[in-house]
Amino acid sequence: MSWWKQSVVYQIYPRSFKDTTGDGVGDLRGITEQLDYVAELGADVLWLCPVYASPNVDNGYDISDYRAIMPEFGTMDDFRALLDGAHARGLKLIMDLVVNHTSDQHAWFQQARSSRDNPYRDYYIWRPPAEGGGPPNNWGSHFGGSAWTLDEQTGQYYLHLFAPEQPDLNWSHPPVREAVFDMMRFWLDLGVDGFRMDTINMLSKNPDFPDVTGAHTPYPIAEEHFLNGPDLQQYLQEMKREVLSHHDLLTVGETPGVDPVQATEFTHPERGTLSMIFQFDHMRLDTDRTHWAPRWTSRPWTLTELRDLLGRWQRELHGQGWNSLYLSNHDVPRMVSRFGNDGPYRVQSAKLLATLLFTLQGTPYIYQGDELGMTNVHFDSIDDYRDVDTLNFYREARFERDLSEADVMGMIWRKSRDNARTPFPWNASANGGFTTGVPWMPLNPNFPQINAEAAQRDPQSVYWYYHALIRLRRAQAALVDGRYDVLLEDHPSVYAYTRTLGDTEILTVLHFSDEPGPWPGGLPLRGDAQLLISNYGADATAALQPFEARVYQQR
Ligand code: ISL
Image (cartoon, rainbow, N blue to C red):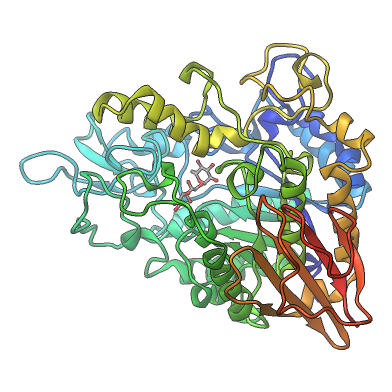
């Protein structure tokens, strides 16, 4: 069986993990220093968010040199030391592969913009102004405004689905694909174990570049024209043939807007190209899709909605493809604040959500700090925020749309990507032991309570629960490969399901409520049921406590 099905991935946001130089920015040596922390937790794969040379308009997702390490993070020797240190501990390491776009400071773009007949011109996507002037169509950038920027010198617009400093590569131009494949070989030759492929289903755009019709904002996100485009699978097949098939890798595609049928196309064991994908259905669960800025909205969701969408993925990919299991990452709020209760039930609900991640089918991903039950942050002033997306949203919402400061800050507190990016709290000392200097962004003020040292000292902590869950998953093949069956399909507060493999059946019961409740009548517990893990220690059919989670083996 493919090794990555049994893996547990730990995602590191290098800028915020551990600073060893005192410049306030995390670095590669800091990660190497803390490899034992990750190994002891029990994860066996590290995913490093981008560490390549970058002007950091989007914290490394704007790459100016794919073969160099960002000087703030260290050197190529530091990278080799990190990779060796990981391998020595039995940890694999996967890199972020950001090839939908480069930085505008990349040599390719510098060449491309220098003249219309430069050989690198076609590495990017250029269009003349619309008739009468203005951008070629109404496509919007994910980070606000038009997705097109005029290059004054050559009189044409270039496409950028993200910031203007992140021009999109033209994947229909064969030399671009060759250059990317070559760069991938460079990292594989160094010994990396795979790639997390950023926005990989955005590579193929509708070649006609039509306007989005029926939009309720001037610059809509043109998903129907760039997600899963006509040539995408062909590009990935080519990547598989040229690069991926020559190695035994973990590859995970970031693929917003895919359904299980499309996911199967990506991840089918024979026909597919990638090990697994990140699907986004549950990331849209709490958003209002009709709002001008859906990602910034919050809508109450029901357990039935969550159960239905997760269940659909569990059933439809079973035996057909493979999924990733995640509730947070560096782009979204902290999972305990978003899906749990970060007040009185922080510890219990963080454990309940972890139980969900580790008992479904797929490869679980832990985002740094979730194993401590880290929460969202509420900075009073926009000056304490750093994320380009957050700052652009603030500007547009406050000054173009005249929303109140209180409303906008409320949305930012709930949804900003910076919630997940506060520096990692190692202990209760100054700056949480993250840096001896001034941190690039402030820590969450709750770091004196929520930090790694405190968690490791407390046997009841979220940390030790993750530690146990990871080992439970390794010991139980049914949690990796077992069939998923939902129980109590309509229960408003209890999510219960079994995973069955051969003679083994594992029952998970999750009580999504901040009130106690009875053990559900329709949920018989067999006589031989054995409690494998729980966050309260209660057993049998005792009443369910707020956010109680229990996992039983029934045979
Ligand atoms: O389209 C989305 C959701 O429907 C977005 O969330 C989109 O998938 C996401 O913004 C892509 O994120 C990735 O690429 C960005 C970078 O800023 C993020 O940090 C990265 O994870 C541009 O490279």
